[in-house]
Image 1 (cartoon, rainbow, N blue to C red):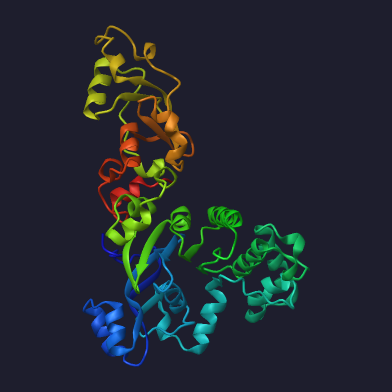
Image 2: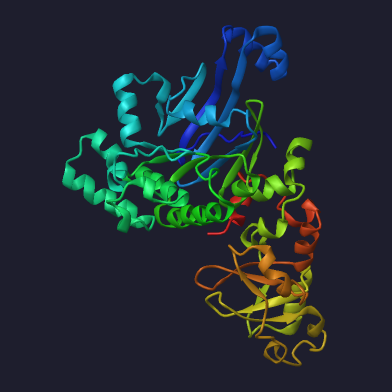
Length: 420
C-alpha cells in the first residue's frame, strides 16, 4: 500500500503535500538526496543536515482520528508542529479547509491558532500559578473573550472531562491523569475545528492512560472532532485511530486502517511492530462483514438452498419485510425439506449468533464455535451483513487474505464495509 495516495476531496479537513523540514545548513541538497531515496544517516554524514520530515503527503477527513505512530526520532512530533507552524516547514503545502497555512502572515497565523487549531501536549503545559479553570480559559482569554463567557465555557469543558468540581483549585493538587484532563479541556474550550495531540498520554501510568483513551473516544463519539494524534505506542494507535500512518526516518512507510496495518504490513519494519498484536482486539465485525444471503418465511426451501449455496454460506438468515432477522436455517437442515413439502419456519433457529458492527473479535469466540454465519446488525437491529466464523479463525491465525477485504480503505468497497 502506498503511504497515502488518496486524492483530495471536500471531506478532507487537512491536506499535506510533499512536506519537508530540514534541520541544518544545506536544505536544498538534503531535499534533493531525500527525494532520491538516500538514507537519513548517509545524508547527515555527508551534509550535516537532517530531513526530519521527508516528502510527507497525507490527508485527514472531517471527523477522523488520524494517528501518526513512530519511534523516538522518527519525525512525528516535528511533523505535527509543522501543521501549526510552531516549527517552520522547509518546503511543501499544508491546507486546512483549503487555506494554505504556509502562505499566512503573522496575523492570519495567530487567528488560525486561536480559532481553528488546538494542541494538547505530552507534559500538560499547565500554568501552576493559575487555577484549573483559569488554565482552561487561557486560549479564550487570548481570543479576547469576556471573563463571564470564558468562565462559562471553561466550566462546560471541564464538565466534559469530569473535572468541573476542581475548577478553582491549583493544577498541582491534581493527579497526572487529572492534569492531562485539564489539558484536554483547555483544548476543547476553544471549540477547535482540528485538535493536534502530541503524545498526550505517554507520561501517564498504563491504567490511567487507558482511561484517558476511553475518555477521548467517548468525547469523539459526541463531538466528532478532526484529530491528529501522535504516539510511539502501536497498541494506542490501533485502539483509537480511524487510520494510522507508521513513520520512520521522516517518512510514512504505511498508511491504513488498524486492520490493514495488522493484516497486511507493508514491510518487515511494520511487521515487527504488529507481530505480537492481539488480533482479536484489533479487528471489528463491521470491517469483515459481507452481504448476507437471506430469505423470508414465505420462500420455498428450494429457493433457500439455492441462495445459501450461491453465497457459499453454512446457513441462511430469515428476515422480515423490514430487514430484521428472525432466525437462521443451517444449510444441512435444508435437505430435510423437499420443495413444497414443508416450511422454513419448522427448521428456523431463533437463537442465532449475532454481533454489532463495532464488536471486537475477542468477544465472539463463543459465537464462532457454533459454526454458523454470524449476523452483523446495525444500530437499529437490522441485518447489515454476516461473517463466516472460518474467516475469523483464519484471520486470527495470521491469514490476512482470509479475513480482510481485498482492497484499500480508501476505496468504495472498503468504505461500505466500515461500521456505521
